[in-house]
Image 1 (cartoon, one colour):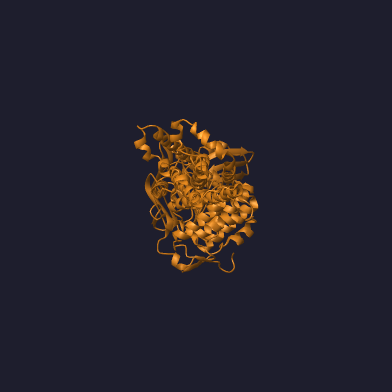
Image 2 (spheres, each protein chain N blue to C red):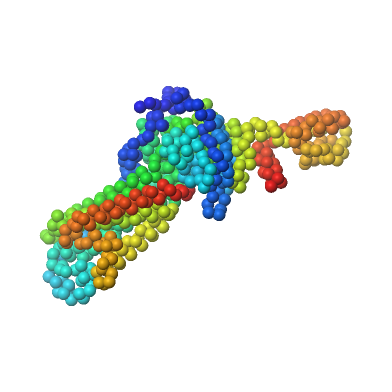
Length: 279
Length: 316
């Protein structure tokens, strides 16, 4: 160390935002890769199982659905389970996949920001010349890519399950369904980011975001059953999600969810910039 | 792209401003709880500045405020002449920070930590990482969660020093290091000073401060008690005196002298503490007796520290 000088870049030269963002996302994906594989495989196996089961229960489904109360059918959007898309939508894409993927994205954000703060290494990161908003952008982008990876694995296994069973989900519908779930997850990742801008613990962030997720789902459910609440369904993210696997992607809804998620993340960055970081 | 050499801070970085850190009545409160109150200090370029105080005195709060992790309630701080809040990014580009207990995601290795920080700092390669790892016998390839506290702290040292920063902010840096590694760390700090770096070193290891620092600020209950040159602090405080007389001496002769305390008589040998300002009158009083041996020893910084505290206690 006393010998030849190690040449180091001038410390007054600002490292570009993109370079820092790429470094943070790369680190985040490395943190999340195991979780993404596990979530994607787990959800994919469940979807593949449902798809594989469909041909054998197809005939009896019509009778079963006919016996459901009208209110239940309205609430869960069950009009007909005669197609593989409608069946998979009811079994996986109405609640299981949206909740699981939203949790996965919220957890990714919570760990990258509040988890790092809780464990004391956000300090070490912030001793480097990196803006808090860059860290937030990195966490949100990592959650977006992690969620996409989970969905790609899920989609691949679903397709394999369908091919094996001889009744595969149409590729366009599957892509629409996965895109819709992804946008919904990004909305709740945005909620988690905003929470991380306000509170200091990963558990608190997850708790707040999960409460919003549950409340919005229930509100949307009630809105479908009650004429009094129906006009207010617009406040729930699930209103914009709809049933893309069955009905195709609502592009406007997709944009609303993704944009709202990004705006919430930006608000989280704004809050994080203005608060103390606890050690 | 201009560059700096790690073994010397080049001249264009040493600009006209002499102070690297300057705080003006810096105050941080946590609701009703005390943090720091009206802390005003100046750290000059190229000095090793000690920051002494017991746990909870406000050392870490001051450092975290300088790093913009905490936002001041009032007052201001400037580093390199830049505002600690508005210009935080430009400031952090020029410093290295070592917290008391370095923490990181336990799944990551030291090499991954430094790689990320190097990317964020725009440093090509890993700078001085390998040389520092060799010096501290640090394992860069084991996950941080598998390392002992001391070995984790070595990774902390590497990430703080690898990019040869102009300013090093070290908060209780030797916690968990064994004596050999503490020695290596002290040598590194001395070399960094020789390189032209400025060091702010918070510690309650008084020997460490005495050995490494040029000046020292003492903080207590969130307020600065004193800022002194270490040499002045040692010089202006009391001495331990041991006097051996040829014959018996009544302890009362010494006890009533102004500036003398803790008189202990052991046969013809008398030990006592004497304030530097009272030395002349004490020597004149002793001169009435035949003296066989006389020894004056400076106090340890710890004794000075405690004396300073008790003085403050009395005056408040």
